Amino acid sequence: MTEYQTLRFEQSGSIARITLNRPNSANGIDHVLGRELAQLASLCADDPALAVVTLTGAGKFFSAGGDLKAMAAHDGGAGAYVKGLADDLHAAISSFARMDALLITAVNGVAAGAGFSLAVIGDLVLAGESASFTMAYTRAGLSPDGGASYYLPRLIGLRRTQDLMLTNRALSAGEALDWGLVHRVVPDAELATATAELAERFAAGPKHANASVKKLLLVSSSHTLEEQLARESAFISACADSPDGQEGIDAFLTKRTPTFN
Image 1 (cartoon, rainbow, N blue to C red):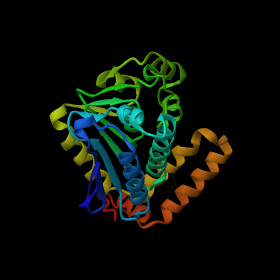
Image 2 (image 1 turned 135 degrees about the vertical axis):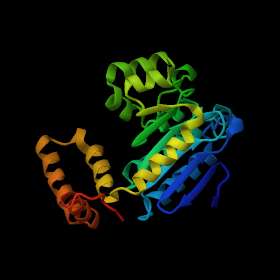
Image 3 (image 1 turned 180 degrees about the horizontal axis):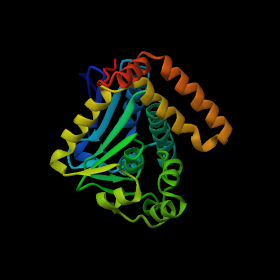
């Protein structure tokens, strides 16, 4: 285990586990957590052995978002502090989005502000029954960050995004599921187990194909149909030539369970 001030990080084989670890501050994102998360996300993205990264929070909160007390106390002014904080958070989100490994976010409680933004970037998003989601930015006189203005319109549409960002309404875990913000809601006591089981499942799966899915979906909304078709052709060809592709095809033809590397 590598030691961090504000995060817990563990790696077992091809699975990495990240826990936001400021429980006494509702896992609020201060400059240390932002910097450490950016560094750790970059390390994960650069590790070809990783197949899955899980992200959750310690204690009763996933994350209450940016640490407003730290912002207000910063000698250089709140604006400069927030700019540095957002830049680090955005670097982390970019690394998570572009890494080959799948990201599973396990939302164990309140996800507010940047915590909301971070929660929904997962390739798979699990939520405990007590989880809740609120933007909360304009309540503090701030505008959204953490990729919220990119991800939310794509996930739930413009009208629902406007509702969340302008009214600061809170969604329960069940409502977040209905809206399409999360993939699955499980009892709180089962969240860690469900996350671990899903991580193990994907760690045993076709890593090259899973990474290709991430890459295809990341750019699909900015490509023309023909550009995306060309990208699909290139990716499926590369998958077919990969060891996992060859194993998967052979297993299908011989009616056996594939064993991916």
